[in-house]
Image (cartoon, rainbow, N blue to C red; front, top):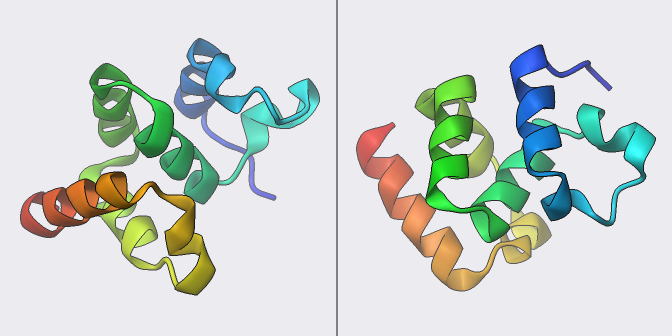
Length: 91
């Protein structure tokens, strides 16, 4: 698994309560896909803005739209719809 940047690791540390189910020693190296999913589902808008600033809208959109099948079901339906529309229009 690739190492995350210092900015991503800091974002994860700031929001460690969102990743309560991940062992402490593995939190900072989660995948970008899991990071986006968790922040979109459970984070507040400030955290979403930080995520978009760190990764960039185009990279977030690329990862989000690459979801297939079961992975799409990991998002709350309202959350998926909101970010689908947002990223389709602004990324």
